[in-house]
Image 1 (cartoon, protein in one colour):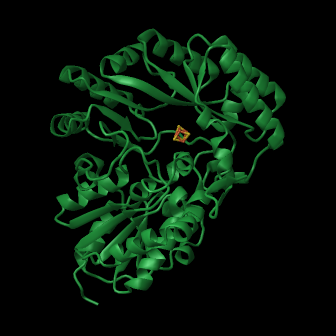
Image 2: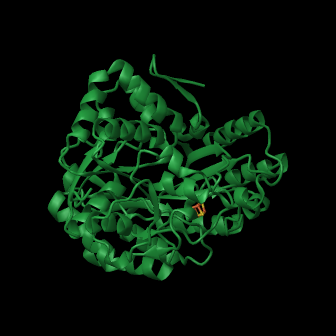
Image 3: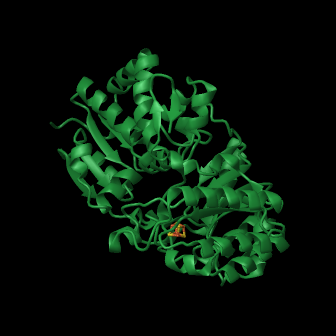
Length: 454
Ligand code: SF4
């Protein structure tokens, strides 16, 4: 086949967080358009989110829930068959020769089912599968040619260069795995949300953005490092220019950085803060921040001045013994100092916790409780508390499997309940929806009733 491949339809399947447009899709849209590719986008996630009732919308908003993706496909085929049929027909009939599916852990089954249906309807279409779940499976040595057998090309890693090459060189590839070279981050164009403007995202005055890829740490339980080979940050001037552009052209005043962490390089981060302060724009932003003992107090003051309204911080434990096993790279003393600096600067933040890490014992948990009691005045919020979840691409799994004893699940549940109670007794706010939310990780979703089945 020698058909032109320089047009592509990017498809985002459920489930991903529906309140903001998909950043990965906007980043690819911007990159491919800047390189002369004819790109279209279809946010199937947002489109279908609009047609379900409120109880299903609540499930949709939970962060990680792979079983939901599978059952949602069945549910929609049962209750809204015309919706799935018209979806398949629309994608199969789209003029683009290439259809790209960005696959997440939480969208895996829907993406696979939809892509298979499209390929069946329009065998002449070239299907490309990429995204975090493809990369995680590949790095965990899983057979990805089987589950993505419908794909003409499977892209592993940061996919920009491989996808552009496929769209421009005209060569056919059949079920081929391509490990993409990471792009030069400093020359990547800004995410382009113009193709997504017609979708009714709930946070209409906010956008997701990014200033870095990768992480400088290798926490024992985390698989983030498998997605990107190295940590890199954009030029701070470019980031500020992008925010200003969105502010002046689209009226966007709030931004959510989707980076693994925004303070991976303190020198570059400080330049970003200085430039934001100099811009004097009424822009507000939030992001994930790493606890670092080398982050000076002046940076917290600058963050506040630069418009930061919230930091999400992975504390994970209040026990130094467990932090060391987790390889978090900081101690509780570092965390206390970090929180004190944030408190002094008037910066709001929220922490996440993992309970039941392999090797964690009652004494460790008691130490964590004391940490929260001792620091109650300077910890504003517990955002998330969940049992430890084993990830196959994580260092601890790849090195030795589960190291140490995992506490019984009922004990961990009890610990989480007690931690939440301790927070409430000490006036630390709690986000109820994100307490134990990952225990729905493999829960069932009844395709007949549209409800969770534990
Ligand atoms: S948990 Fe956070 S800091 Fe640790 S490796 Fe993962 S992304 Fe990096």
